[in-house]
Every structure is written in C-alpha cells, then in structure tokens.
Image (cartoon, rainbow, N blue to C red; front, side):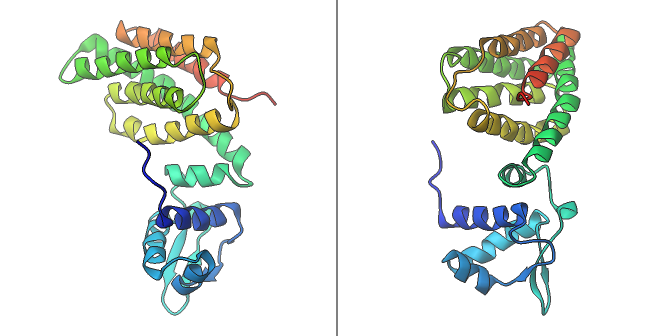
Length: 232
C-alpha cells in the first residue's frame, strides 16, 4: 500500500526540485523562515526538509548566512530522490545517460555473480534464488498490461538479481536501478504494455541465473539494458 503523501513530502519535493532544476541556483541563500513562507508550511516541517537536503549535499547551513544551495558536485547523485529530481529538470538527458552507463557497467557483472553464486551454493543462496524465481513468475503474470503491478514486478526482479550477487554495493544500487525503471515506465513506455521480447529477456535472465550460467545471464541483462535506451 502506498503511503499517503504528507506536507513534508510536498515541501521536500518542491525545494529539492527547485535546487535540481536550477530555480534555486548554487550559492543562493535562504532561511527556514523564508522557505516556510514560500511553501505555506510550518517551520518544523521545513527544518526536517532542510535536514534531509543537507544530508543529500544539496543545502549547507552556514552561520550568520543561513541555508546555502550547493553545487551539483556536492549532491548524493546515487540517492533515488536526487535522481528523480534531476530527471524532472533540465539535466534529464544527462541523468538518463548516466543511469544507462551505470546499469551497463553494473547489471551484467551482477547477473554473472548471481549465476556463479547459484552454481557454488552456500548460506542463503537457495532462498535468494527462490526470490528471483518468484519475481520472474510475477513479472510473467503481469506481462499483459502496463501499470504499477508490472513496474513493481520489474523492480523486484532486478533487485533480486542484485541481492543474489551477494554484494552490499550491488544491493545498494538496487534503489538507483528501481528509479530508472520507474522513470521509463512513466515517461517512455507510458500506458503501453511491456514489449513481449523485453519480458522474455527477463525470463531468460532469471533462468540463466537459476541454472548457474554466468555468461548467458550477463548477455541477457546486457540486452535488457541496451533495449532500455529510447529511440532518438
């Protein structure tokens, strides 16, 4: 069940998006009071928002100056919120390119490691392999229609591959890949059902990992990522 959107969520999105789009440019100074007035929210909500944005490197609290907007070099660009805000701004194409490059570098390696983990066996591997198989079944069951259920199944399958690879770093990148999949579902595929060939590739990926075939798993996910590039 989706959590209801709160005032905190709204203000965080407003201010985060304003920074990511350049409406609040690097070096811009503001204060809790001015943000509260501009977003018609309470100071307590804005304080929580500024704490989050500071942790993301997008704001810096400076004595006697206030809140200072930070340049993109300081941002936590692997945080899903920052990714989402950048995708909604003028840096969208650059963000899409970076996401594709990251996926192309990470997912084939993760798929190969996942298959090798299945081939070796070991503590927890069998359970994680079952999760991957269940995610593939869910993806196949939702393949006939677009919508949130298919997106959740798609995200779950990719997350299961990363988890099976047995690397905390790979698992951490699962949130990044989930955001890339979310954006594609909302902005590129729209209301169209998923391409049957893409669905088939995901099932090929899951089966290759399930039988411990690292080369086939890497090849399948590599094609998945390549096909995620929208036409020019």
